[in-house]
Image (cartoon, rainbow, N blue to C red; front, side):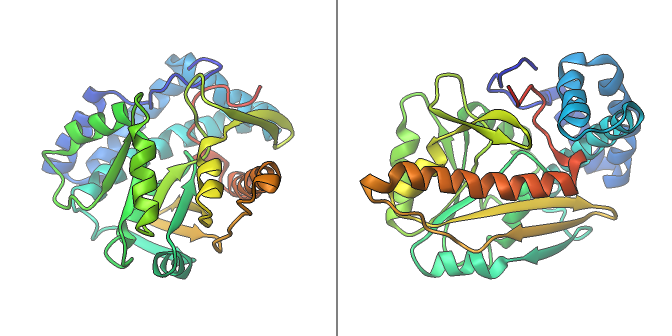
Length: 294
């Protein structure tokens, strides 16, 4: 990808269909096995995705060339596993997975009080939070690009057995902002990423792991504007189809007009601190395939 996210998530329709076919007819292990051929292909023959990740491993994390190459393969392999797991989970194939929900009580707290924001990033597999939906006594709305919403709907309609997701698609007419407002007024939960934005969106430039990077102002501004708490979450894949979900304690930032800018900086600082720690612990599960840093 280029030095700027182009509004498209990696992975084509043909690839999704191939994995869905394998899952339906041959099971999870056959789909994972295909990755032994797919991952090396992306490492060797897709420079637009490879070069930003080499920059990440070499420059940001300071890995050697050999270690960077190994982590590049791991990154592509785990990314493929995560995509397969998403399809499996959404189609009701969850019995083979195990989960550890650390901080689940924080989501219950938000749901029982005044709702709020569940903020993640493009690392790990945040969709496993869906395994909590039936235990949280309020709606959870997942905010995503309209194009991604249609892509997921098209690919998974034939396999999804549980349509429990409430998706708010981001649209050019900004109608998604009204949908978010309505959900928050009902004290419901909004799940959103804080690490991507479309060209033209309002951003904040800040130091992130030693280099400057841009982050979207929108998700943090909405939480502050509506005086709603934020919990920062991660969902990391571990061997043997195990996922560890972690949610921080909810934090509400001052919505006073005179303190808005400081609240925005504080929220972003907390998010970056949480994200940096998670990335250093699991560097292979960062899935932003473009030049994230300036």
